[in-house]
Every structure is written in structure tokens, then in C-alpha cells.
Length: 365
Image (cartoon, rainbow, N blue to C red; front, side, top):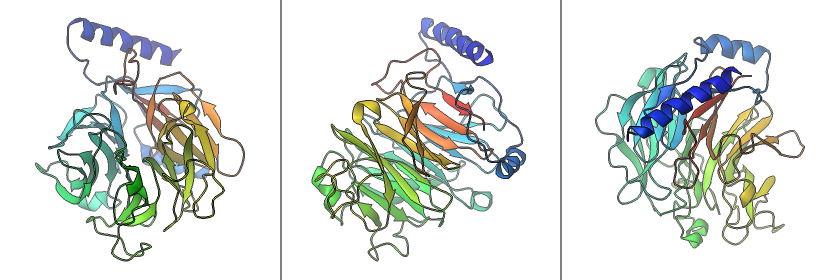
């Protein structure tokens, strides 16, 4: 009942803003635990799955939230794709404060300010990383929230009206992993010297990471169409989520140097040259974006499918949750307190915006 009242209140505020001809400002809708470290410790002692039956709207009124990453203090950074704004959601909740405006963002189509990642050593160096579409390409930058200009650490990822990739995530090894798309030029996914249609593995300075399959190359795996989800399980197994074309979206176990088949194959092909996905869905049921792992379950946010897929990593069939409840779902992440955070993407030009969109949802364990 409390959630319904919060959402109803958000709707009234959104309608009032729209009637005045102004875009509604992002605003807080509810509080979250103020001591994430304590909650996280408790969660570690008694692992519990996020309760998807008890949604909590943390923030509403965002415009196409894409990147989502947490600082060590438990506050969250969320990037708005088209505006290039980065906002910080305080620990304990509260109105999101604009803390950075990414210069040089060229939004349009599926481009703009995309993935965000926080340096594992943030408490010492305060570095944040972003993947965005510029006038010339897709690129990766590192910066501190107080910097005027970010430092470009990797550039030359071909941009397109679609399939720009964009997901950033630090792996258990401390290296920066990058999901890229084919930018509509499908054969480049099979070109080992081109960064498009790949998963890249970089150092924090944007250099090819030591131990990559080919020395001096940033490529970790190839043959991808549009990787937009990266996650690791407790045993450090890596998972990659990507869009299919007309038939199959994929969940893949990512192994170094392996080829995932695009554009030669889509979905399970049984072709020894390529790795088959562990799960696949018809594109109308998924069009998957972000991914996160909590416990032994992989959570996959679906755009066209307007649902949250749960994939049991210990075996069993994937299950659809929240179908149609919030529209298009873009990014999913696990917070320091063990809660699952989920962003909607109904203002991206392909959805039907609802009162309060776009929003950040939270599901406590």
C-alpha cells in the first residue's frame, strides 16, 4: 500500500509539472537504509534473494537513466543518457544531486552517456569511468567528480544509430571490462583487430590488460552483436548479455579468446567454432540490457520484453518477473546493502512514459 501511495504521489507531481510546460525534475520518493555497511554484513551472514514482491521507488522523474554504479559509502551514481548528466542519490535516499555534466556527449539513437563504473580503489583515488558517444566515436573516460574535463583512456569504438554497446564493469581481477556493439557493421564483430562487437579487458589507464588472449590487444572475446550486460558469480565465472537480431537474445558464459558467433549464427547453433548461449529468449520477450548477480541468480533487465528475467545459475529454467509492471527495464545492479536496484527506460523514444518515469526501483533482500 505504501508503494502505491508513493507512486500515486509521483504521478500527481509529474502531471503538475507537465501541465506547466516544464520537464519534471528528478526527485526522491522514499528512503533507503542509511548504514549500508551494517546491512551488507548482515546480508553476508544470511544471504537472501531480493524480494521482488516489495518494490520501492527510490527516485522518479529521471530521463533515460542508463549507467548506475555505487560509491563505497553506499550512495549511487546514475547517468542520464541524452542529457549527459550524472546524478548522485544520497545514502539513505533524498533528491538526486547533479554532480557532473559529461562534456562532448552526442546523443541520438542509442548513443549518449552510457555505462558508468567506479574504481575499486575509489576510496583512495576517487576515479569514476564512463562510456559515451562523442561526435566522432564511442569512447571511455576516467575522471573525478570535481574535474572539469575527463581524461580519454580509450577511443575509436565506431558509433552508430544503434548497437553502441556501452556497459562498463570492473571484474574480480580489478580490470575494466567493456561491452561494445557492432554499430550496424556486422562483419566487424569477427574482425579481431576492431574493438566493435567485442568484450574488451583494459587496465584502469585504458591499456590492453596483461593476460589478454592476444598480447597487446584489448579484446577479451569476439563475435558479439551488442553486449549490454556484464556480471560475475561468486566463483568468478563471467556472464555476458546481448541483443539478438530477429530471433534470439543471449546469455553467455564469457571465456577469454572465445568466439560467440555473430553475425554467422544467432542463438544456439551447435557449431563447434562458436560458444552457444546458456539461455536464450525471443527478442519480443527480452531485448536484454543490464545484468547483475545476487546469490545464485542472474537478473537480466529486458527492454522490449518489459520484464526482469531471473536465471538460476545452479540449473533450472529462467523465469519472467515484473512483466509489464514498469515498462522498459534498462539497468539492474546490486547495491552495497545487498538490495537489487532497477532502472526504467520509458523516455528513450521507444517506450510509453508513465507518471513518474523514468525511475529507480529498489528491492530489498
